[in-house]
Amino acid sequence: PLQILTYLDGEVKVEETELKPRVGFLYPVLTHNISVFINTTQERDSGQYMCTVNVVDDVTSPGKNVGIINLTVLVPPAAPTCRLLGSPTVGSNVTLSCASAKGKPPPVYEWQRTVPDVKVFFPPAQDHARGTLKLTNLSLDMAGHYVCVAENRAGSAECSIVLEV
Image (cartoon, rainbow, N blue to C red; front, top):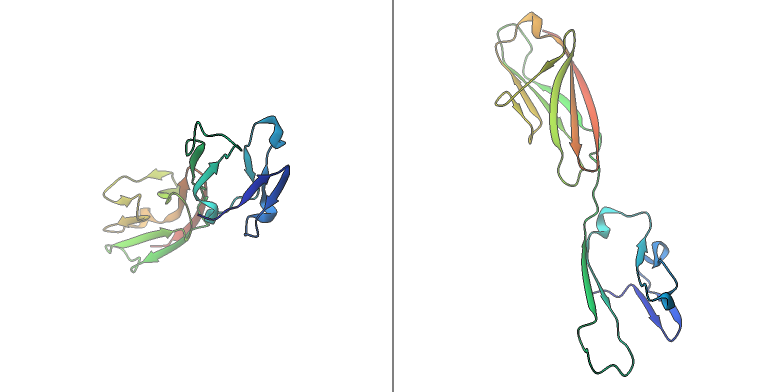
């Protein structure tokens, strides 16, 4: 455990950690609400936080004045990269791939053709976890603008690719 914040003898002390400029008590401590804030949260702030209250001369509840909370900082998907794997000629097979370098929880991917007509794809052609779309036995009418959306609870991002058959 790494101590971050202390209130002792009427003074608030913020320890020398990377949280120092971003953390503090939300209310004056004497209000008996010792909620803490963390500004500009970052993924690395995720973890378990413990609050310990020690009351001078309190012998009735030693070790019982502890609160624990787990913090998970969600991260929206980074802008994904769209790629075409294979040779887009009539009768061949290609795979469109979509990958986002960041995202917590890991994003799910959704491919859709938007032009000339909207078309939605389903498994097994589309793999929502891997971000791939397999197009088999290409024909001229499969050409168009394909969009991939990477999404999680924190947000979404997209990329697109033009398939010319």
